[in-house]
Image (cartoon, rainbow, N blue to C red; front, side, top):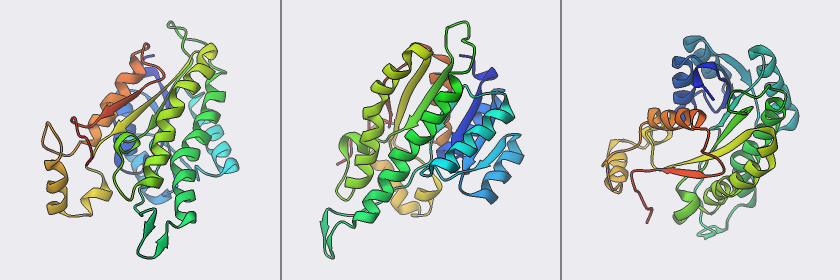
Length: 251
């Protein structure tokens, strides 16, 4: 599939990895619709890069249906779906205040895992309407996992569980959608320079970067976007999770 002719929706694209992906895709010539809860930031980014914007709560069926449908109508279909919307939480299974808050665990799963599936299932239904391209493809789905899916740290039961779910569903979804010509991949980023990390301060960021094998730095969101673009164009990538982490293995 050619990125230059793609019609892409990107969740969580008002900032971070999603924003970098939306920018890179637009720079390559793709049509892009940003899906995000942050209306002010989302519309500002969309206006700056020449993309569309749809407000969405990825955990809500009606909201997701309305956003995906509107994006498809505006772009004349959907061929690429990149799920970057998510949250990071930290809480031990049993801490000083007792057992892990169940509502916090459920919210993490709802947004990161169920939210990703909610959007991709609707996007896949739109992709199924497309005429196949020269490679017999109708669409590409890219979800965001994390290295925490494989070596999560203490306090990451909810986060790691949600991201492991994303990695685990890549292959069955790819198999489900094979007859429709739709691929499903996941990217597992390591420690990236996102607004959340920048807020922790330079000292903490330098400490995190020191744990990366090579190169000794945090990941650039543009590198995530570059990998997402490569996945779109490489038709033999399917049903797999790619670590993008500088060989980092969390302690």
